[in-house]
Image (cartoon, helix red, strand yellow):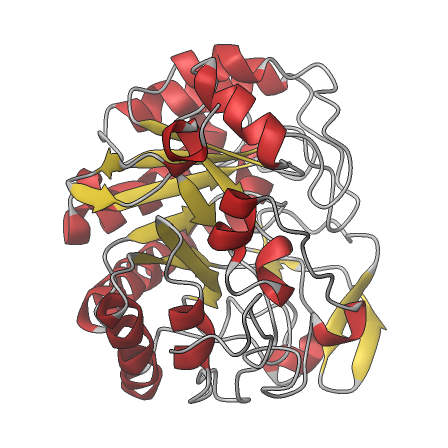
Amino acid sequence: MPTETAPLFTPFTLGGMELKNRIVMAPLTRSRSSEAGIVPDYAATYYAQRADAGLIVSEATNISAQGRGYAKTPGIWTMEQVEAWRPVTAAVHAHGGRMVLQLWHTGRISHPDLHGGALPVAPSALKPEGQAFTNDGLKDHVTPRALETDEIPAIVEDYRRAAQGAKEAGFDGVEVHSANNYLLEQFIRDSTNKRSDRYGGSVENRLRFPLEVVAAVVGVWGGDHVGIRISPGTNQPGGAPVDSDPMGTYGAYLDALAQHRLMYVHDIEGVTQMSRDADGIDYPSLRKRFAGAYIANNNYDLALANKTLGEHGADLISFGRPFIANPDLIDRLRSGAPLAEAPKKYWYGGDAVGYSDWPGMSGPVQA
């Protein structure tokens, strides 16, 4: 198949945006922000270097101080944070790119050190496995505090305010992070939600909070500028088992989301950074429940991406880690050139080294 006509490199219309290809840069936590949640100046260079992607989804961005689960991650709840994002979106747009902001609340996947000693919040007081990344290194997760019923509307308002901040910062839309066992998915799954109020128990109740969040964000942007990320089969971080009936639960979720006419659903197929094993999840069936675009994610290579698009198994394909050391990833994929590998020491934390200084095939990538 000639490169020019390979599905991955053909244009696509997404929510009124004309994308130059069907490659999406997946959200990549890089832990370069200040303690105040402000992205560094060189983030504009980093993202602009990768603006040849059809769409960039920003690194996961905290909607509030309460939403923080990892040190050195960015926020969108203060004006200073909004102002810091503006040069980033301007640089991406100057290079002909499109970019949405991923809205994030980590829930129980956090630590008191990140909250002035206060406990992280969750739907239920269930301790996750594993460790949290704090300013003093990795520390064991703790048992979170279960949210009171009357606290939940304030978090919905945090999402609405964050969505407005993303608009003021110049993004082209937002992606609601409803995956990877963070707060919204903690409410969705019966393995992490043991509540007895209107936000727990039945599938309808467990979906109530995430759907209230989506409605608030759509109220700011309109559905054609809002995407959502899901992970029906992911059992990390925190070691939470998947829902007891993932097809029933996520089928109902997608049915409800379809009513909001969202721009896309971004589906992690399998376990992030690990297996593509469906583990009983019928992804094609779930896709049919949603009328918007479908972005497939997790360990796709060039051949699998083109095959999936050619068979109409997805509308777009997102790539994550390959973008770290390959700012010119689209050119490399198009030409069949080998991909550079980033040592893990550069993935999280540090400065511009191992972040915005990776060369392209022909030398430095201008931004």
